[in-house]
Image 1 (spheres, rainbow, N blue to C red):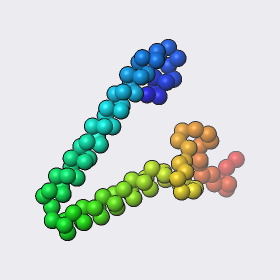
Image 2: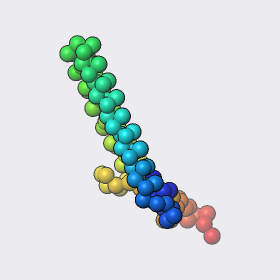
Image 3: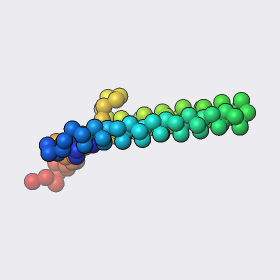
Length: 96
């Protein structure tokens, strides 16, 4: 999508087609998630379902913390990736 938006020669039909394709993929993913949860609900005991919910909540916490990025100075802030100055440790004793 980024490449398509960056391309000034891309026409609006092409951009809209790409948006439709992404929307379809997201809808397919949502259907699969719901289908999985329904299948679990039908086949697991209440205790097993509670364990599965707890595991999913923990996994979500890990994913959210990973999205923030390593070295983020504030919650929800991402470090700059490939932009700006490189953060390099300099040893004043060896610098000339």
